[in-house]
Structure formats: structure tokens, C-alpha cells
Length: 290
Image 1: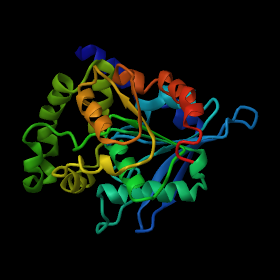
Image 2 (image 1 turned 60 degrees about the vertical axis):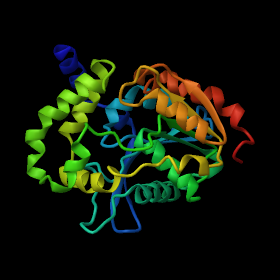
Image 3 (image 1 turned 135 degrees about the horizontal axis):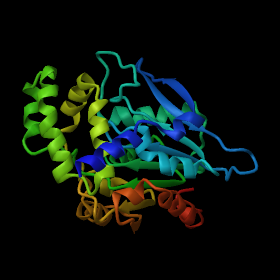
Image 4 (image 1 turned 180 degrees about the vertical axis):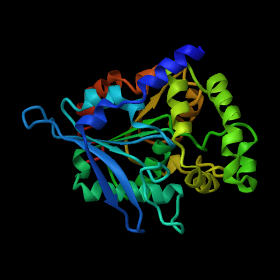
């Protein structure tokens, strides 16, 4: 598998979507800036909807390239890089908690003048939980929220969450072999998923990660899911080791209004199959949230 992972990592070096999209630094109300990539198709191809992605912790753009390029055929596509990523500029005193990140998303949507009734908001992993928190706080009411495996807590290797407060950032390098092993052996369904996570580790902004880890690592969000009344498209992937489908099924039972779809694998949730599924469900969401 090692050779396969290396080959996949090389593929993750380049994103076709970054080549066609406009890169925009958006100012936040607390003095931070975050980067988004935005692409709008031609008038004749545009279906009228904006697909905005809020993806997992540290995730890199190439991991979503297949979906982004397919969606760009007829959606306005906005890929939001959250504040823990290296592309952000965050004041030392700034908050990196989940509610602040939800507010970032709200402010980015407002900055880009995207109307809720044309907004398809796709959240993945902790990004999906953040989208749910933003809906609960009435920051946005998307036409269609698409939630891929929202967790009730942030996934970390066993024991690591308890070491975060005491671990200086210079220990990041020595810890990487353990993290790489955990990703490959325990949290990847194939070489492609392993490569995606390994590149994320390579590009980590360690100081931001520690600060955000302190805000996220000890919280559980089971209380949040029953409070959200928005109708959502809830996506699970049975073979995904990082995002347990049993957790997603439990989330379905806690949320009042869900359409549950099992996409089978992590690869499918990041592929054109996912954007095709979104197109398929657009007619079914007319009148549900707006």
C-alpha cells in the first residue's frame, strides 16, 4: 500500500479547481481573513444555485477536486478554507472555536452576496457539525444543507486529546510517525484516502491546530442535533473508517428532518457521484426550508 499512497499523494499536489477558480481573501469581523476559491459557470450553463463547501479540519483542495470540477459545470462553486488552515491570517487573540468558524462561514456567504434560497451548503466531517451549529444559531438557512458524516466530537488518536494542553508545538515532528500510522492503519479505507490525510498533516499550521484542538477536542455535540429543524440531506459512507456510518445513523435519529443517503465510501462522497446526487435532490427540497 505504501507505493500506492505515494502515487496518490503526487496526484494531490495539483488541484484543477484552483486553476480555474478565483482566489479571494475575505475579511472577518474579528480581524482575521480567510481564503475562498470561487468559480461561476457561464450564464447559459448556470443552474442558479451556489454550492458552498465547508470541509473537514485541515483538508486540502485537491481532495475534493473531482467533485468541484463536476459541480462547476452548472453550479457557482465556493470552496471555503477555514481559519485553521495555513491560508488564513488570524490574530493571536482570535477565537478558533466551532461557533467562530460558523460565523466565518456566515460572513463569507454574506460577503459574496449569496442568498439563502439559492444556497446549497455542503459540510463534511467537523465542517458538517459546524454547519449544523450555524443553522441552530440562525446564521444561515440554506435551501439545501448537505451534511456528510457530521461527528458528535472531533476524531483524534486514542489518548492524544488528553496530551494537547501539555504538548509544545515542537513535538509535532516527533509525533508525525504515530499520526501517519494511525491514519493509514485505522482511518483510511484505501490509498487515496490515506494520501489525502497525509498531505493534510504535511501542510498543518501547528500553532493554529493546537489552539483549535484545545477548543474542540473535549466537546461533544450530541445535544446539538435535536435542536435543528432545517431539513437536511444527510450523507453516510459505510466503508469510511474515519467517519463511522453508525454515528451518522445515530445523528439521523436525533435530527427532526432528514433525508438519509448512504453513499457507500469516502471516495464516493468526494466524487462526481456526490454532485450528481445533489442535483437529483434539488427538486425534492423545493419548499422544505424556503
